[in-house]
Image (cartoon, rainbow, N blue to C red; front, side, top):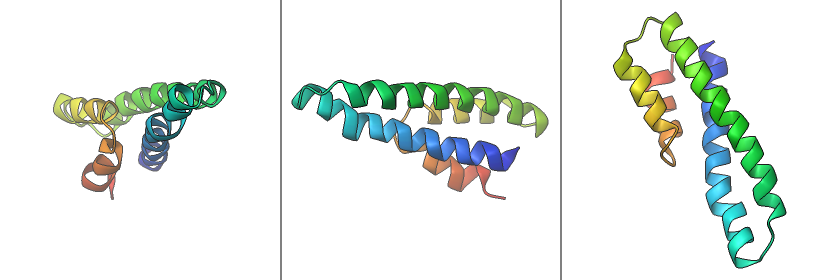
Length: 91
């Protein structure tokens, strides 16, 4: 379960950065809205999977609410999922 969550966290972080670094400039600077749609869908799916897996993992590992809050906050900040992978999720 931890390995699955780690992969999901990394993919969610990549999709979040792709949304800001690739698709948003394409949408607003080049007028191309199509990449934003697909990257946005992928990011939305990965974000929901990340949150669900964070709750399930927190319960199965018997972690406290503080760690769940840290995991949730990391999903909202760019680069934070990479940080929590290194600090909290490495075995």
